[in-house]
Length: 409
Image (cartoon, rainbow, N blue to C red):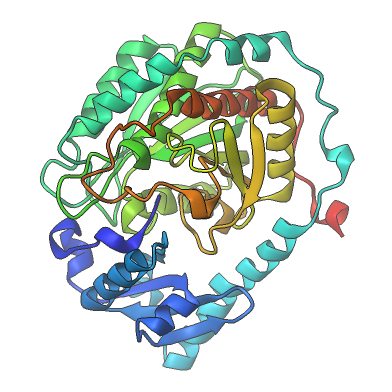
């Protein structure tokens, strides 16, 4: 989960330290921190600003003191010479057109209830039931212990790729060639992302995405057990079962472990933008970020309603009813709080199930205390492996697509 509290000088990559940074953040938090916005949207409560490292650190400390998972999205690409602007007014106009206008439309679409005929009338499928039944909480625990056993997984610090490359080796050993595993390099950070790809048998160009960030952050040691070794481990268990199923799915399934999420969604931002540039057909994207802390009660989870797609949320709810049976509530971040926002911003349908209501999330994230403790529940984390499996298998083996504009209006 992207929470500003731990952005210190020694954590940030060199390329992000050399200059001020364009950020999109909670508007009230910006104003409270004394950071002047270039563009503001009162209805969305979002502000776009250029902030120094000191201002970002202050915003971080202020948000953490308020008990908020306050955060921002970073836009390093706006400092590229190709984005040169003629004037401040030109910059503001381009931000309005390129960032806020799509957000306003997506906000409208995300709150519209999709037509019920968009869901195919879910009848339980034996292979999805079998997959869900195979989820083992003990496997998730083992992976969380593996990932949180590294001193840190922080982008921009020495050893930033040690855990990522070790995890890649574990993926390759588990998959035994059943899917490809590759590193993804980035322009804005030196930390890698990972992609696992199960090639579709009939329509490989149609892709369902699962993802979670693999980096961590904190003032000191950064074990990141809940944020986000838990989401990565829930995904790893889903990958293990996808391999064991040994089925040929019509559509492709891709699973991402994103780098640099804690620095402003940087890894997923580049990936989603590249997919849009290449006009890749991502049918839907599911994000897992924090699955271990049952803050609203065991087996009671939230579905995040902002920066997500109403059709994808409806599908997720129906899959939960059909295969999982967790208690599901609606909640809201108020900003682009995790990598689902990168896909949403690029026009793809995203869904984001979360460990609890946003206000009930784990207080220990982004601290050295984000470790396995008596509140951790691997049975709770298993719910998210089940949802990820059901989501991927349903979308990869059907004609489902999110509702169109014509259907919504």
